[in-house]
Length: 196
Image 1 (tube, rainbow, N blue to C red):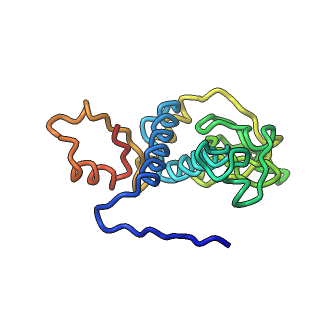
Image 2 (tube, rainbow, N blue to C red):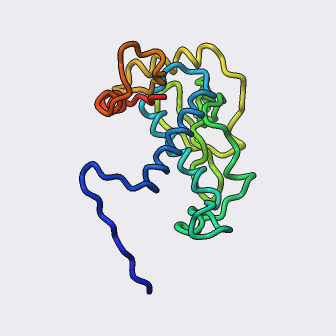
């Protein structure tokens, strides 16, 4: 086995490779957020969005990675992805998910927002319930994709207000009198804001 060198860094030092990966994840988060119709999203959706982004980044081989043919997901977990199973939903799309039946007149489906693949071998998907705010895991045959209704957008905004912290995109152009100094950036980012 070859020797592994661990390079620890001091305070205020940065590792360029790690900083670049963080920047890539933030860029993907901004792009994903720009494609959804919500002004603000609950904290749970922020976490799921970042998990979805990292899942897809690790689903494909990296050009400067250990292997040119195998993805980090395959190398570390031994998981081989199938397009028909693991790439079924787009983050932020609306659908009705089947909740099961108890032989009463209660609704059998719930409105939900897609959070991405669940990562299991069977190819399930994760959905954010607009009724409870919980993450639901469903198979493809238990989902009915539909156009996004205005009520769903309003419900996500209501849930984001109740959430301890949501996600807002702040453009520097919208922030009068603030400079791009480290202290302002770190202060804003500590409040779950993505500063563009």
